[in-house]
Amino acid sequence: MSRILLHICCGPCATYPVTRLREEGFEVTGFWYNPNVHPFSEHQRRLEAMQALSQAVDLPLIVPPGYQMLHFLRQVVNKEGDRCLYCFRLRLSQTAALARE
Image (cartoon, rainbow, N blue to C red; front, side, top):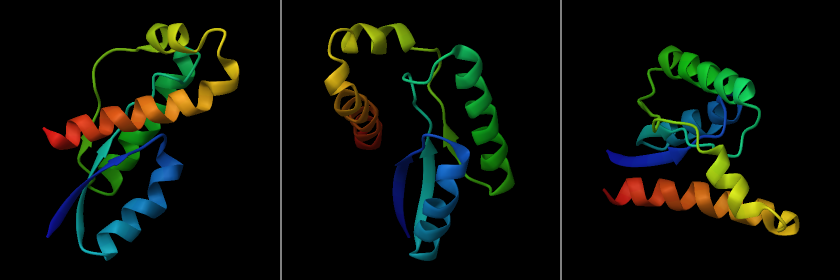
């Protein structure tokens, strides 16, 4: 069985891809890394929902420690037009780096 590390932004968005990848024969591990989510209470609410889904569907989940919103904001200040591109690049590059490990 092939293994895959899947970046997950939230529980509802993970439901279909996890199911589909498993149907395709992948052993899926989730990676929840979202320094772009603000305020902190929303970040925590989404994380808790993802952790509940992870337990419900027996999905291994990697969650790096901390809340890196300040780093994210420093990178996008005065670059609001490129914010989404930076956000995708940041989250997917972190996922790729972890997958390489």
